[in-house]
Each structure stands twice: as C-alpha cells, then as structure tokens.
Length: 64
View 1 (cartoon, rainbow, N blue to C red):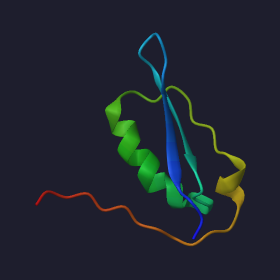
View 2 (cartoon, helix red, strand yellow; view 1 turned 90 degrees about the horizontal axis):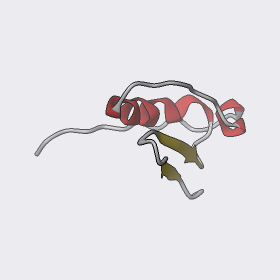
View 3 (cartoon, rainbow, N blue to C red; view 1 turned 180 degrees about the vertical axis):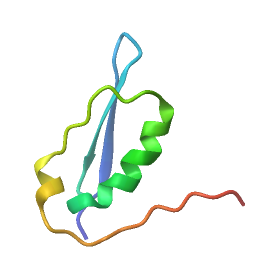
View 4 (cartoon, rainbow, N blue to C red; view 1 turned 120 degrees about the vertical axis):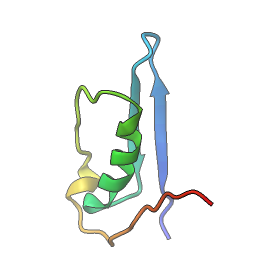
C-alpha cells in the first residue's frame, strides 16, 4: 500500500497551507473538506495525483 500523508505548513502570518500526498483521484476531497473547516479557503490547487485514477476511500469522524 502506498504511503499517504498530509504536509501542513503554518506561515508567519497565520495562514495554513497543506498538501495531501499519496491519495489518487478525488478521494482526497473528503480529507480536504475536513481541513477546510479550520478557516476560510483562499485558494485550491489540485496536484497531479488528483487527475490519476485511484481507489475510493472514505473518511469518517465521530465521537465515542
């Protein structure tokens, strides 16, 4: 299985940039939606992996 990771950078002015790696296709959309709850989205750019065919994955967040 390919390694999946999220690279997060906090800029000096407080803005956050992140890159989702190892997730092909639109499967990263659910991960991105979760992170975008942290604040206002100024810009979105898809990486090359977004345009590759990949298996579907789901992210579920709940309380226990």
